[in-house]
Image 1: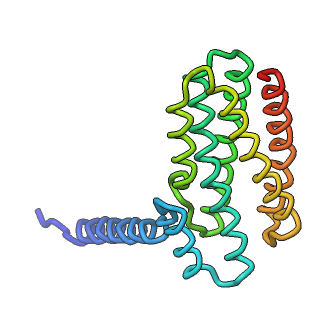
Image 2: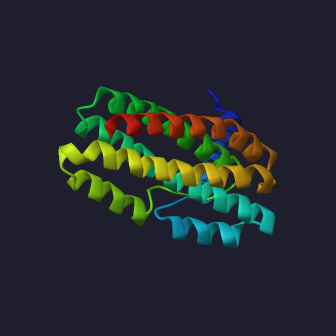
Length: 198
């Protein structure tokens, strides 16, 4: 019986072509997925060299700042839940952890879609604040924690108010206008807690 090799050869060629195409796609994903950097400075440097316009660079700078500060906020919120014995502080800290984690998730997704590089950790200053608060005696912790978080939120509110006018990307502008009211609520809750501690 005569065996025809033609269908077999076609099948092998198709399989090889598929594997090569998948391999190329995988390499393309690897080259385009490098949108994270460990530090804020590394992220800024990558954005400065990768983004085409000054407006895009300025938007990216805001994104990097917000992501960096939100890593710090989440860690400080977690610290209060572990260290404080005050129920109201713990409740506010839980709200902060939930909201700032959501901000991180949404903003990292938006940045990825825009080709922006983002940091993967908080700033050195935030690490120092965390260490200082970790070392505080329990009796002093609540007040110091409230004051630190109030200052952080006051700074964030100011940055977001400026960004509402300055950012050029429409998706980023929408993000700013969504998050800003939440930051004001956080600041108000922290102030209420702080007043009760005096």
